[in-house]
Image 1 (cartoon, rainbow, N blue to C red):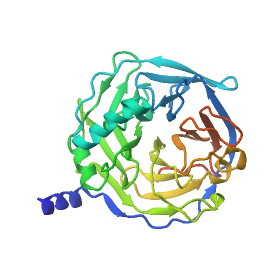
Image 2 (cartoon, helix red, strand yellow; image 1 turned 135 degrees about the horizontal axis):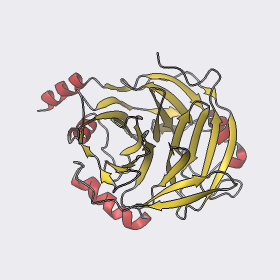
Image 3 (cartoon, rainbow, N blue to C red; image 1 turned 120 degrees about the vertical axis):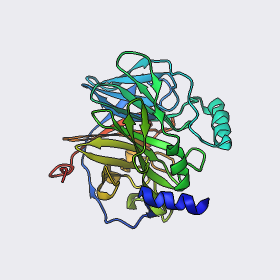
Length: 331
């Protein structure tokens, strides 16, 4: 059985390897910083540009999206409530499901929404880390869980992902047509997966797994630490035919091929994020939300309700300018 499964993974064609060291990326320039008021439970875990507005989601709220009013400072978050239906069985093992259920009583938020993306119609897609499921919230009509192929979780786990509690799907990206969906597995191993809409279901064409990689990497020089951190993905964005990964512990944004997940280029935001007044007394990166557009990128922080050096405890969103020459055109 193991040999048959290994052969299947080879046919699917994902990259299964420890990631090589990458060259030092160019630093992005910070344009502005925005504090968000009105997210009662904080913990901003996803951002998306939906129509003409910026929207956010919290991993503590199972029934709300937040429309951000960006005209004044601080930004104001307006809660738009919805009622998700019962979560379908995604194929996660019993042990992971039980630990998730117990944790929901401790921290709140049974669904643990960890990513947000929107298609050209304005429909929002929220990924539930706790249940390895994706909820679609349309502009009109009732929310519904996508009918994801059962092989999605099987292939991810067969590639070494989704094996550890609180290290499941952490990011989601959808294309404008709403027929391709990418998911990011967080860490130990991290990875990228894709499913395509087939009428009412979402399936894999050949294979779901584009990338699965393990390993650790040094923390940015600004942290003055010899400690290594797990390679991770904390969010995904789709722009101009490319995937962009938010790599929290490395404090960087990377551009990847949307068909193969091959790494093309990275840019760092460590210099600005780790400025003395912006530092948090937490041993890992906190950037968990990403939006990329032609002129720059929005990066949102999930600060776990902790204060940074200047005393700010509310969620924070940074705006970085696009690199010189842009993010790179489709070949």
